[in-house]
Figure (cartoon, one colour):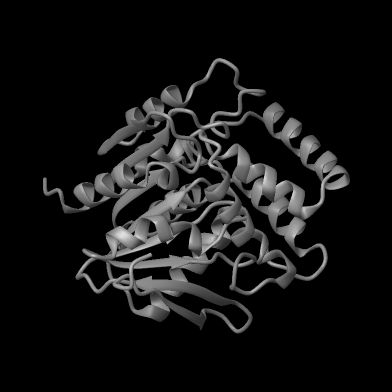
Length: 289
């Protein structure tokens, strides 16, 4: 990355036992807060903030249980994560922000926007979970798969395969870089903490669904998906759904929303199509009604 792109790593306690790590770059008048997805970390956003920090103040966080933030016996629910973000905003004395979430981070962003609408100016949902509805039968089947996964797979195996499936084009150098950066954080956790966080987070996404509340989102919202997303929808449970159908349903439910579908991109669309995604986010934030 160019020398002009300066990232400042910060840590701050939001409660007596939860310390949040975050990267900060840029000094724009408007602040964008970035929320990563399941088992990821703040560095996932470097491909985005390198560009957007030229115009905006960019803050990319590690959720509790991830990256350099505190690891512990936390609930790891969507509500828990949203409340941690609220506490961080209070500590940093931020006012209105733009909220950008990827995958589970998009789910958390929606929960936060619904709970604290006065704090969110615009909302960007990138390959967001929460837009796809799961029935009680779906939940049961997912939980059974989780139980099998705990028995069959190691932490590193789960993470590596999840990242590989998140890309459409198999760029070995890029994918291995993302895998290595993500796996480096696993040894920071006590034995079993990683799997506990993953399992609780998945359960949180299933039990705290937001689709029925989407009409209550009043912020302007940009919904971005890669057309070749292998994670959303879940084709084993929802074989008739497509990325487009999920996105269009969300667009119909969120009044002030628009959809951007990018070809030849997977779940990590903000990395594979960084130029297009960065340009879309900047134009969306700078757009005036």
